[in-house]
Image (cartoon, rainbow, N blue to C red):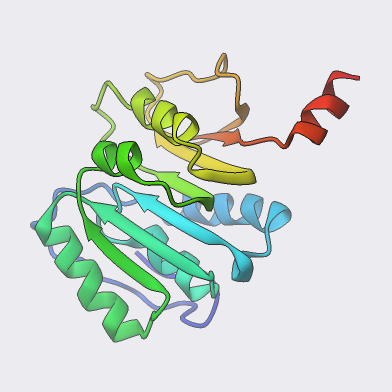
Length: 188
């Protein structure tokens, strides 16, 4: 995997082979960040990376000077690798939390501009992450939840659904925490 843009642009990161991960492809990641760049000033966002795995998305946000990034993963090998990499890359705005993503989103009260979740594709209950994010109001007004998932999941009927994009086997569903003013304008 490589960092696509920002202060560490072009840097290749080689994760240990024993990590239980499936990193987001560079093509899908580049497309995702092209979309995010149209809606956010990435140097001003606070980000939550759930199921962070290798830290692929964490490094991309940090390289683009995100204000803060919280990387959450339950696997100690993953969190140790991310800690090592953020130290090597001098990403002082990144914090790493070793915790189950469901437990984190159920207990956290911190608000974020962007939440990215990349659960294992075979996981069936990923809708709980969406419920936790909106039920616990973890997004700031106009904040986005981006869920990476397989073709099995369809969130198009969710009230905060915004868009869906597919890049090969990678699916991104976007949810937006619309402000009351925008919701009223959309109804007119």
